[in-house]
Amino acid sequence: MFFHRLNSINDLKAIDFGQSVPLHSLLLLHWFAHAINIDTNGVISLMFDPNCEDYGSHYYNNYEKLLPHRNYYYTLGNINQATSNTLHLPGYVIYPQAKYNGRNRDRIIIEATHHWLFPTGYNIHRVYITQHFLNTMAGEYDADHTYEITPNLLRQIRGFSTASLLVTEVQNRSRFHGLQSASYTSTNSYGNYSANRQNNWDCDCLTTCAAGFFCLIIVCAVLFFILVNSPQFKSRNMY
Image (cartoon, rainbow, N blue to C red; front, side):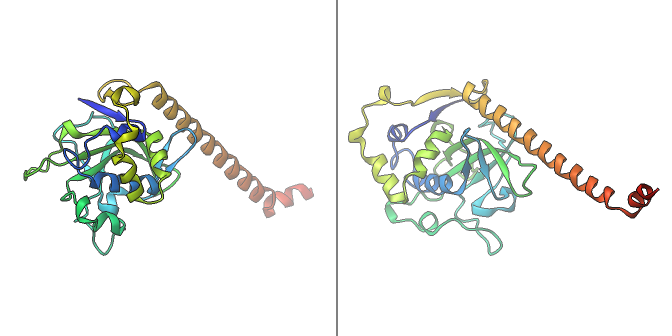
């Protein structure tokens, strides 16, 4: 399956928001960009458990084979899913102005694995925006309007203090000079990772290994301290 990879605000301007794609998707993207952590290597971290249905999230089994069969996928942004026991999306996403109403069709899908250092943390490897087909009861997603979102674009979105400013900028097509000037590219989700994504994976692995080594040193130091201060050790040294 081929998806367009959106890497900049100019790439967002190439999407027909408000027509073929719900304008509400931009509100959801704005919330998501501010809800995650992105390190200098482009590694994205999610600091809540999507299995707990926070922010309208749940496990996505990819039964229609929209995405490649790699890791676990989760969807976020179901505004009708909130309960008293879950974290809620902000008001501007749940109760948008009429012109932003997307009929609860738009979603964010993340490919994520559990972060071993944080009980509720997840490493996000890929981010997509998509939408349910209109007037369907099956709940399937529209592959023709599914887009991969890069860490670079998420960083740019974080620069907008409000979602309305982001929408205004995206709709200002006078600054957009067509697809040739943007980094709007097709990507094969079943192919190999790009070199940049592979570097991010490598950096993530190095960070994880370094953290594990640091933890091991701390544990050894604590055990050594306990040993040298134990009565048995002191009594042996007396003789």
